[in-house]
Amino acid sequence: MAQVLEFKLPDLGEGLTEAEIVRWLVAVGDVVAIDQPVVEVETAKAMVEVPCPYGGVVTARYGEEGTELPVGAPLLTVAVGGTGAPEELTEAAPEAAPKATAEDAVSSEYSGNVLVGYGTAGPVARRRRVHRENPAVARAAAPAPVAAPAPVAVKAPEPAAAPFAGHDGPVPVISPLVRKLARDRGIDLREVRGSGPEGLILRADVELALAALERPATASVPAAAAPAVAAPVAAPARAVAGERIPLRGLRGAVADKLSRSRTEIPDATCWVDADATELMAARRAMNEAGGPKISLLALLARICAHALARFPELNSTVDTAAREIVRLPAVHLGFAAQTPRGLVVPVVKDAGTRTAESLTEEFARLTESARQGTLTPADLTGGTFTLNNYGVFGVDGSTPIVNHPEAAMLGVGRIIPKPWVHQGELAVRQVVQLSLTFDHRVCDGGTAGGFLRYVADCVEQPAVLLRTL
Image 1 (cartoon, rainbow, N blue to C red):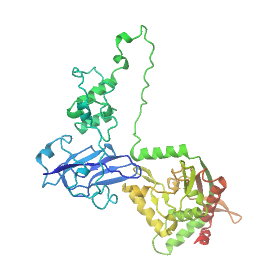
Image 2 (spheres, rainbow, N blue to C red; image 1 turned 45 degrees about the vertical axis):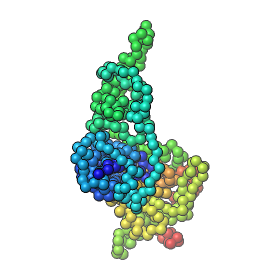
Image 3 (cartoon, rainbow, N blue to C red; image 1 turned 90 degrees about the vertical axis):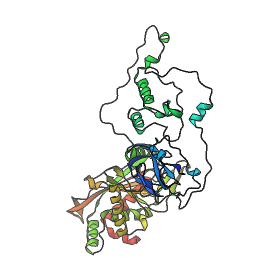
Image 4 (cartoon, rainbow, N blue to C red; image 1 turned 120 degrees about the horizontal axis):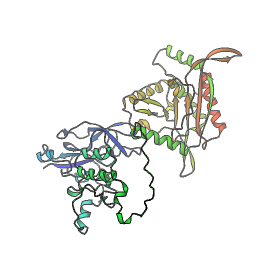
């Protein structure tokens, strides 16, 4: 006999707590193999295909495309251990299908993996289960309440009617359409008492809660309690008109990170103009010599890595809890990349040990993955210093916001011909503005200025790098 297992949205790592369903890869009734991707989700960091660790027949899916689910919420149920999907399971509503957890599937074969490249290679060890009180059981054990008349349109839900407060994952709803109605109208389902079996929330329950919110607040006050002369009541503030764009997913993550950086990091910025003519000539000579082309970003990354070796204060982070500055042993270089989904910062691991050719290849790989939306969480985390080439937008300068929890960011403007005094004479040279935003807790202006001056010297005279090779 088939056993129905519930597969929940797994922990996607790196502190991610929710994900949005972008595309279902399977339908109810489909047969899935162990570790077959079943849904594509978008987190605050990347697009991820989530594989199901069970093999069997899909009996239910939870959430429409575009729905945001928290980690631990049900994704789908799979009938395992049988030769096919029992008719009664494929035709039943998702809430009515019997479910089992991974801990109950001791006799069923599954991989234990939760994401491709993550998780365990074999079956996970059976863990001790933490039993939570079932709201339906709690209501059944409680003294029977006094019978009340059937709800009508003018009766507001009781303030204590929140049987699912503190519940992990979505509350039981009869259909995704009801969940969407609640989301679109701003109704918190955890504050709605379901009138269906075992507290199942029906459409009528959501409509009742909506009617209660739309009714004027004075309607719930008994007439006897009203004062003889009604005091003037301030009218509720009108919502500002205009297009509303939810701050969630990638945009929400960027907003949170930038806000945290501005709140926690006392940053300062210094900048300098540099003559990049010799650097451009050196790159041209490298590419004319044959072999893979070397990018300008790769040369700037090499310069940054050498500068950080001389000024390790800027390759650090601040442990606020311990009140300590932590100098990091390796340079993991992030670089800002603009994509159709927004700004992302992929990270080149061990940038300090890579050649210009290796850096060029890695920058190209990560940039293409960013444009395709296929960066993994590992590609977007672990950075220790960020290189921001905003010159590609046709601007000369900027004051970048430090990429928390890093300590500094180097900004590079466009390289354009400008009048410049070269060897005592006025000449037209390729000039670039370099700016350094840094956490003033990790160093003083002298260190930051020394770092930026060394970077500028390497841009103006690439041969300076030969001293450290």
